[in-house]
Image (cartoon, rainbow, N blue to C red; front, side, top):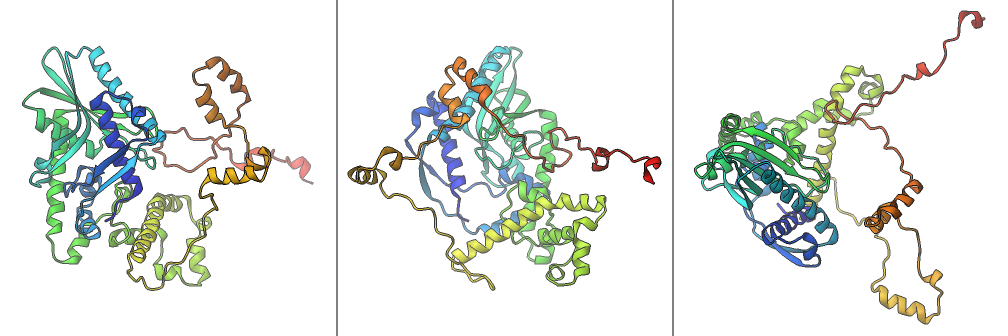
Length: 429
């Protein structure tokens, strides 16, 4: 399956981060530089997909069918100022983490960048490895060691937590497997760096003993997933599929074609797809949220995110097939709305305008810089920035629906009737 510009950007960002940490440079030193990277074939049961194949054994098979044969390729991308800025947040955090271990009394602190970690003992795939972006080993005076396994997430769509993260636990297991004979590892710290979403990393500590309990579950799930690949009867494969938040949060590539997810969507809506297309007003009234009890509405709301994700996945799959020249009955590709007009060469246009003796106010659009841009300009002058602060306003975020597990505090909303005074009986007549 073809990569995306976002995946390519993430790969280049990882390469830039590795260069900074190994060469001792800041990311700004590489702005404008063209960096090359290579797609390589990952382990079939990759740690990054563990959330999927541990929860849904059949997802591994469906993804293999959706992806087809792996095709290696080289690609390159220029380091932009924005990329360098976010990568630097990650680089600074890793360097700061190493200093913290030194200040805490570690007698030795070792940094291993883009380290291949063995995972064959988990997945059963010969020679399989995963990559720890920043593995820090801190050794204490008593001879015990802590292994900090860091993973850089360069995307900005979904915030990822390190707490009980299966991908990082597999990496942690690989680190113990790789360095357990060299160091007396007693504890691990699993760290997610996501600089485009927040500056502070997410971290979670786990003992070697608890990690071993996870290994047992992961091995069982991996064995189950591999067995499903060998199943020949399609009906039996469906039996091993399971829909859930791992479909979207795990970025399953088979979302658009998974029969179990389609069934989940059907049940979440509350009617067959054929029924939804009918003109029966009674059916539509039944489906209407305004006619449902709060408990029913709550149950359906839990399925909304997954249903919306399924819809996007189906649309993307249809588009992919049409672009590949495959016919999809009932649908076709059409030319979209044309983009905004742009100058081919702005300098040449500027020269022509000047020859026409156009005035500056006719040639250029001038506008005041934004508060964000102003903060960048004045960041080295706190006194001047403080003069500007009282002139800035910012709208409050609009209320939005979130699950109760969301970390943000709940808004207290009074029922409408509480805003009105009760009219007494003496005024009623």
